[in-house]
Image 1 (cartoon, one colour):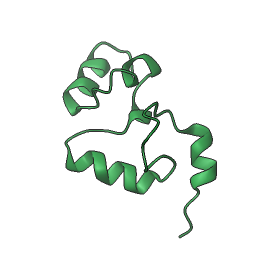
Image 2: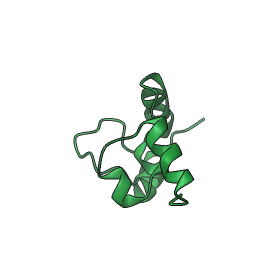
Image 3: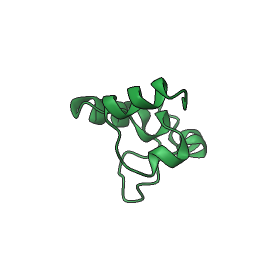
Image 4: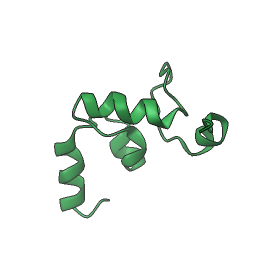
Length: 67
């Protein structure tokens, strides 16, 4: 399977600029899951900017109907 990095970059919502995984979704998801997190693209823009990508933060946003 070919990586669609260039196309993924168009929709990547991550604001962490030095990230080496930008656009490489499989690496990004694997990295965050190891840390019990979700990638930034799973969060609304204002929540993504907090860099709190924890499962708990995501669940709180779902409970608040922000996602």
